[in-house]
Image 1 (cartoon, helix red, strand yellow):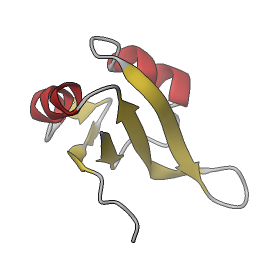
Image 2 (tube, one colour):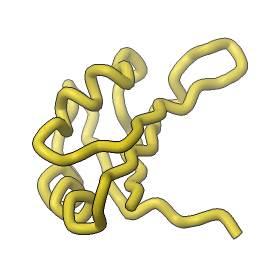
Image 3 (tube, one colour):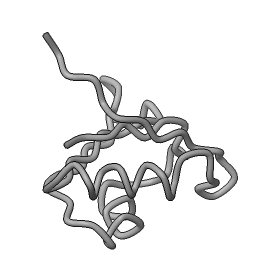
Image 4 (cartoon, helix red, strand yellow):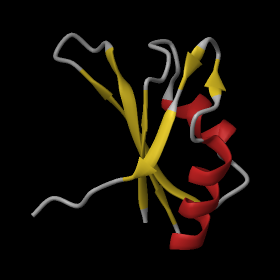
Length: 79
C-alpha cells in the first residue's frame, strides 16, 4: 500500500521521511523532485501492508512537519 504526503518542507530528504515513519514497515520512499533536483514538496511512501499505511495516514494527516502542515492520503494507482 502507498500513501502520498503533500506539502512537505523542501528540505526534507527521503532518509528523514523514512526516519519519521519508522514505526511501520516501509518498502520505499520517494521525494518527488523537479528537473533541477529541487523537491516538489510531496512524496510517495510504500508500506508492507495496508494496515501500516492506514495507521501512518491516521497519525500524520493534518499534522506539522517543521512549519508545514502536511496532508497524508492513500495514493491513487495509475491506470
